[in-house]
Structure formats: C-alpha cells, structure tokens
Length: 142
Image (tube, rainbow, N blue to C red; front, side):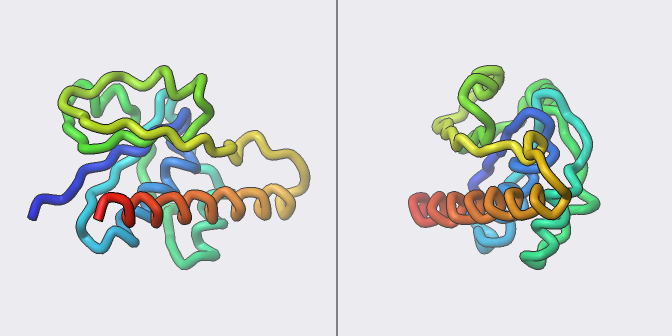
C-alpha cells in the first residue's frame, strides 16, 4: 500500500510544522509520509526542540526546508496542512494534484514573551495541540 503523502507548512519551518511532521511520521504507523517546509525558512526553534524532547522525540537535527524548492521539484501530496495563521496560509502555492488542503490555526512559539521557562510552557501547549490534531487527522483518514 502506498503511503499518504502530507506536507505541513508554516512561515519559517522552525517549530509548528516540524512538530507536526514528527508526530505524523511517528504516530501514523507507516501509513503516512510527512514532510514540512516554510515560506520564509528560518532556524530550528530551540523551544520546539526542547518541548519535543520532553515528549521523547528528537527534532534537533531536522533540516529546514523551503516550500518553493518542493514546488519546483513538482512533489505531489495527498494533503497540505498549513499550521500558521490564516493570513499567512494564503501564501501557500498550489501544488498540482493536491486533493485536500487543511488549515490548523496554531499560535507561533516565536511570538511568545516572557522567560525561557514561561515560553517553553506555552510551546508545550502548542506541542500538545499539534499532537492532538495529528491524532485526530489519522483517525479521520483511517
């Protein structure tokens, strides 16, 4: 059986999309092939790395990808899931053959204020929200 290809998109591919990719690849039990990319690729967010590490997942060596490269390579996906605010999601290019686009409005850990520990707590809430959405997505597809 061919895996269902899913692309998670956000602005910098530094936190939310990285977490979603990791969870779908882990929890999807081999039924999915998830990738992530950004519109304006940045650097991996340490808050996201630390939050995921607390859940037993190491994303510290993940690559940051540019969605424009995927588009130029004419990659095909069954689903594109944007994980940023709605106004930013509109920048997403149209991928040929994508039957389903989904938007998850998820707060950006890069926008959090406070001490490192305060920002980490907020990032863990984002992590948990993403994990829940990924589990629900898996249930709906299966």
